[in-house]
Image 1 (cartoon, rainbow, N blue to C red):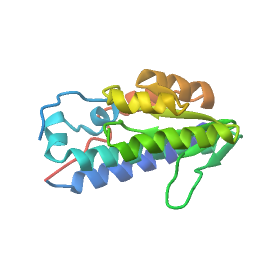
Image 2: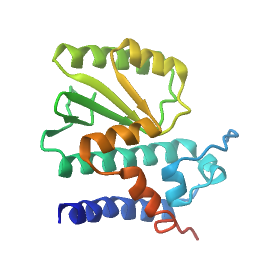
Image 3: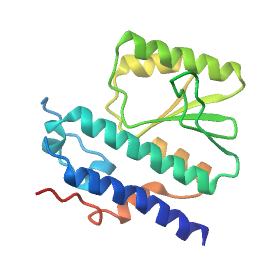
Amino acid sequence: MIKDILKIELHKILSQYRESFSEKTYSDENNDSDILMNLFGITPVLKRENRQYWGRELGMCWQLLINKLCEINCKNYKPALKIDADEPTDLFIGNDAIDTKYRIGSGDSGTLKKFKKYGALLKGQGYQPVLLILREDNLPAAITACKVGGWKIYTGEESFKYIKEKTGFDLRKYLDELSGLVKIERN
């Protein structure tokens, strides 16, 4: 029963994004795709129309999926930590302070300082900072800054393994099973 409720809740999120992506209209050469792009039928060509939009929206979809999955399946789930206007984490599972990212592509000094600062802050409060990154084509300088800040980093398949270990739910398999069922439709 909980698994059915979970699937309904996850499907609601995916359907909401499908509608949003279908209605959206809008360039560097990047032909890489990922499980969410494939799920929604977003080609690299379509993504290049507005990389910032797609990166932001796919990132929020990734965050919401993980948050809902953990909220329903993890007894030791807690919501995001807010510090002023920032949220250094998206959720907590026990001692793990988790931030989700679709991809880390920014190497600006402000972003890198935040990764270092928040990692140290969370460690100082007794948490293990964890980054769950969907994509594997991340900026090396940003990954290094996260490591210096004490973040444990999971990318690509490692993220899915971590999620399955913590929640008991195979999100990768679930998304693969939905392939072709939530493709966006654009006029």
